[in-house]
Length: 183
Image (tube, rainbow, N blue to C red; front, side):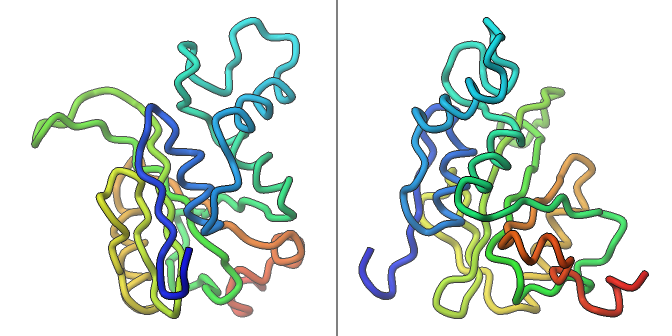
């Protein structure tokens, strides 16, 4: 990746969890093989692994993402949707992994619950939507636009968000603004 470029892996099979991880890290760190190894470590006795698709095409769950981040001295913090995104200390967050789960066919929403992980990260002072289903990264803008984007994402019933932070940030809770952390 040359200076000024934004790393962006595009969707392949059901590997959006791997793409989201790599897009948040801004480099190709994880592969299907490393994710499958994590699945085997998480459920060594299982014939059918509960952490991925039965077909072996991906669709990894949050446990795989959390274990992958831990292997890089990072942590995933579940965001409590009852909080306002203004209580986030975004300078302490390395990236965001969102889980909008609605499956649609054109404008028709289908009653299926499939995970699709997407990444948001700051690169060169701007935040980008790094969803692997996009043709290229989409610039969100600065911190105010990020908060607006995250608020919109989280307003969906099925959406969840993970904060990708360094381990010490997870431990000391500094991903929350100091007045929110005291509550």
